[in-house]
Amino acid sequence: MSIKVLSIFSGGGGIDCGFKKAGYDICFSTDFWQPACDTLEKNKVGRLVRCADIRQVDYAKELASIGLSVGDIDVLAGGPPCPAYSKSRFYRTDKKRALEDENSFTLYEYFRALEEIRPKVFFFENVFGFVYKPHQAAFDLLKERADTLGYDISFKVINTANYGVPQIRERFICIGVRRDIGKPFVFPEETHYNPEKPGGDAALGKKPWVTCGDAIGDLDYDLPEDKDMQAGSKHKDLLKLVPPGDNYLYFTAERGYPEPIFKWRSRYWSFLLKLSPEKPSWTIQASFSNNMGPFHWKNRFLRINEIKRIQTFDDEYEFCGDFKDQWRQIGNAVPPRLVAQIAQAIRDQYFKED
Image (cartoon, rainbow, N blue to C red; front, side, top):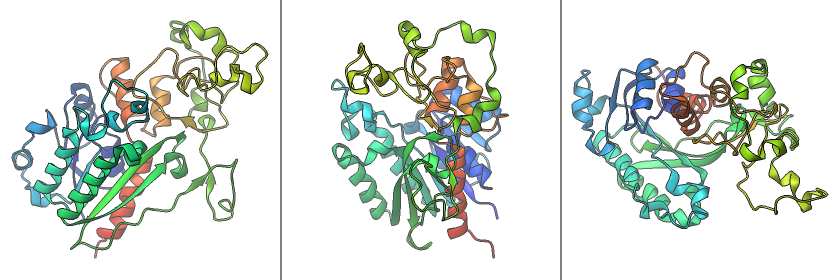
């Protein structure tokens, strides 16, 4: 049974790859950024890729070009760009939040696609800050539009590490199901647990979190280019003193540092943040930085092949563009391993073959 997906705000393909791994047919993908579209094309993720402003996309016309109609689409998938809902907007007083942001049109464009296509199921992803009280208007809009268009929704803030991703990364996932199709979606059970807080999870058959050592330990070798730039920028010597799994707070009075260098919580959490091979990574950011981690436990920058692993892209998956373009695509992506499990649950609940 071919379950057809239309993907918007596709980026470098995290959501698309996840659905494809679960056996779905990715019919159409679109993004406004050329490097991301080149990546989708290069890896042949789906049938058709269109690089365009989402406001200019004619879904019926695009699908007709590959012999399909909007009525053929079973699943709409996408994550509207999320800076307006991110945690950093609480500190960026120069920027507006949620629906007041200049890019809020992306949320409305998601609903335009939903209304025009009327798929059986929709997959909506965003940062976990989407459910914060200051962003209530956007969250209410999602619930109102879904209800008006005849969809029942289920949503959850997910820590990807609890689904076998070697990264502590929280995302807001919402699944909408058209009322004539079936009952509201039930999220799959978590498969992994934090071994430092086991509770009864081990007894339930869950596995410990996947660590950085598990994910990228075999890539832990020295390369000449690692010495070209010093991780930590002007604080590179301090980075070498940070224990694996710690950050700049190591140098504060509250942590008992004899001659404190930084004030408590005076910097972003990722400042001088170093991975531990014994734990999952922290969130891979979309923008590459000289002093914002996470950095490798060997006091160097992470490499593209390493952050691909941390985000659960296949080693063979190739990203286009220069180094920062590739980093941005990977950092912005939803881990395919997480998406594949949700996509499989959608298949099991609504698309069982007779």
